[in-house]
Amino acid sequence: MHQGAKWPLLASMAIFMVVTMWVSNNGQQIIVNSEAIPEENLLSVIVKKPVLVQRSLTPKEITSNWKKTQQHRRRDLKQVCSGLSNSSMTQDYLYHNQKLLSHLLVDHKYRAVYCYIPKVACTNWKKLWLQMKNITYKTSTEAHSKSAYLRMNIRKIKSKEYWYVMKTYKKFMIVRNPIERLVSAYRNKFEHSYNESIFWKMSINIMQHYRKWTDVPINATLVTFKEFVQFLIDSVTQGEDLNEHWKSYEGLCHPCAIQYDYIGRYESLSEDSNQILRELKVPSNLQFPEFRPKNTLTLVQQYLDTLHPQQRKELYRIYKRDYLLFKYQQISAL
Image (tube, rainbow, N blue to C red; front, side, top):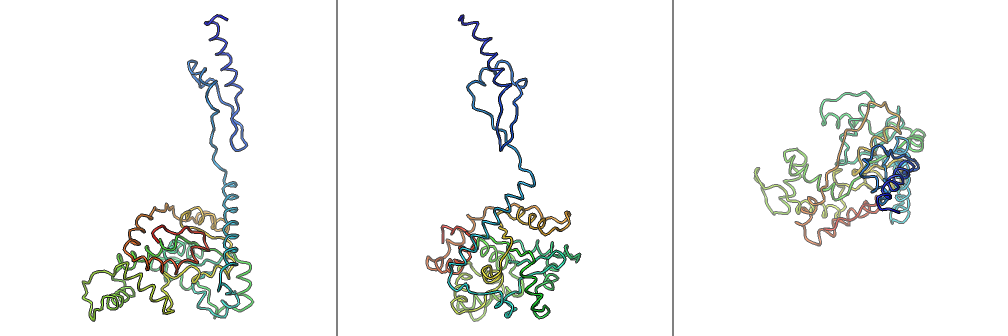
C-alpha cells in the first residue's frame, strides 16, 4: 500500500476505536467523545492506555463503607479484649461502682451514650450534646460545666433503666494516638494554661518534688515534659488515680465491658462524628465542625527525645493496652 494512503486508513481506525471505546470505572461505563480529540492526536489514541475516569462515591456508598469500618473496629476491639489479662470488668461491676461511669453522657431523646475523653475533641462534642438538648452556652468553659449535669448518675437511675440504656442505646467514643494525646495535654495544661488553678498547684508540687525545692518562686521555669512524665510514672507505680486528661481510655470508657456501637478516631474525626450524628438521627443542621488533623508526629517525637530510654519504656507500658485495644502503631521514639 502506498505510504500516503495509510494515513486516512489509520485515522479512520482511530476514530472508530475512540467512538466505540468504553472506560470501566467502579461498575460504570463512560463513552469517550471523539469530537473532543484534535485530529492530529487521533493516532496517539491507538497506543495510549485506556483513560480511567474517577467517580465520586454516593452518600449511600460512603455510609456503607463507614459502617464496614466500624464493624472491623468492633471486631478488632473484641478480639483484643478477649486476649487481655485483667479485662474481666463487667457492666454489673460498673453499675455498682458509679464513679467509673463519670465520663458517660446520656441523651434519652436520641437514645445515645457518649463516653468523652479529654483532649480528644470532647469540647466540640459536649457543645453538640448541649445543642441536641437545646441547652444554651456562651463559652467552652460553660459548655464543660453544663454538660457535667448530663452524666449518667447511677444514684438517680434505677437498675432496670440502667440495663435498658446500656443494652438499647447507641454508645460511642472517640480515640486518638495515646502518646499524642498525652503531649497535647501537657502542652495545654502546663505550657499554655499555666495559671489554671488546679494545674498551677500540680506544677508547684511536681517542681518541689523533682527539683527538691522547698519554695518555688512564682516565675519558676515551667514543669518540663521529662518531669511531668516522671510524675506520671510515679503516680501509676504508687497506684494513684490519674487526672482525666491523661488517664487511659480503658480507665475512662471501659471498652472491654461496654459494647460500643461506634468508635471514632481523631484521624478521621469529622467523617466519624458526622456519620455518628446521622446514625443518631439528629437534625441535619447539627454537624460537627470541619476539622483537619495536623501531623504532630514530629512534634511528639521532639518531646519524647527529652526522656531517658527507661522513661520512654515505662511510659509506653502505661498506655500499652490502649495501643493494643484501638490498633494504634507504637511511635518509633518509644
